[in-house]
Image (tube, rainbow, N blue to C red; front, side):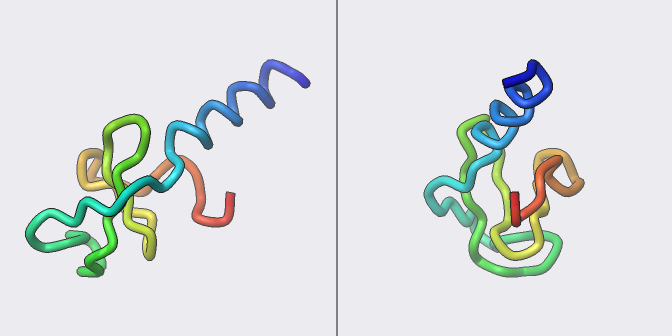
Length: 64
């Protein structure tokens, strides 16, 4: 396995969807109450892939 593959696998693991942690209003981008806490400590919407802490989409896709 190449270094690039290793780095991508680490990225996927760090952004894997964990337990639900919706906060008060759910996703600020789509409104769905399905925010998950990732291993990196950030939240990621299981519907639209939005990361509130980054105010942007996660660097990995929902299909990865």
